[in-house]
Image (tube, rainbow, N blue to C red; front, side, top):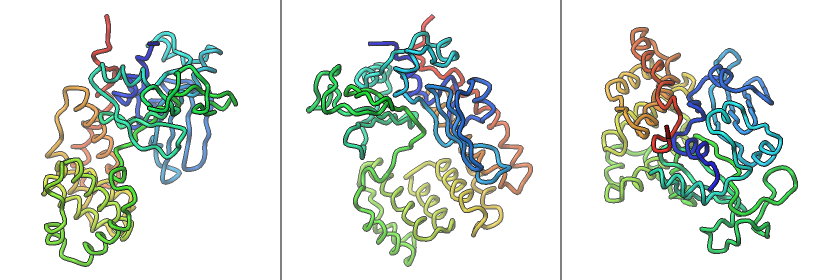
Length: 354
């Protein structure tokens, strides 16, 4: 097995040297020298070589917010051959492999105690995996040794695919991209049932909400199945209405019925209210949701809980410009200051050596 520490750290912690989707553009630029940047009025891609961040902003004067980040692993062979792997990465991890095999990555993350989960992938030439801890998404060429139809991992047979931009075939099982955050998609479980949920949404919107949910909430299903059901329903209600009110009400119902935590529901509300850009948003709505989050902040202390809290601090920060109460904004700021300290080292504890 080659040196996989960087890729395991990325997959598990969801950070690159402590940077992630919650980081600012200034924090990225303080760590990496750019090799390429593609800039538009509302979007930006910062490419350091192996590491890439994508950014967006709603208005010209707004700060950039990261929409994705991670490693473009399909560039490894060229970067290693030309000795162009980013110097901050080499200073931390040493030499990099010219190629990462997905089986090696799966074995290493499982050995560290944070196994990846295979998820559906539309491209038949690829396989995909997802980290429940970090929401990182791993894309690899199909035909790895865990595939019943795979061949030797070093072959370049029909299962290989040109994903590195060189025109050369890529061996089966080669990791192409490790990007995030890509939270679990509820429709993975309910794919093909969009019309069913569209009907649910129409019925819910024309009925008394609590009574309809009492009759349809799949309370006897496993928690993860029930949670996905609620996720699909909420998504469809938003598509149907484009109004924050019904969606906010559903998030609150979800917390009351223990589908999610109070903090998760409050953050989901903030996200809806921010996306609505003030349309149909009652005064003080973001303040109310933020107050509920502050009263139910999850604990920190280990990798999993630190990852959750860092994400939540980032999400509550998105609502900061929309708060009406200055005192409430001041109560949020210490949490924003804490955010970069969580997972600042960016390493899986079990992989740290003296």
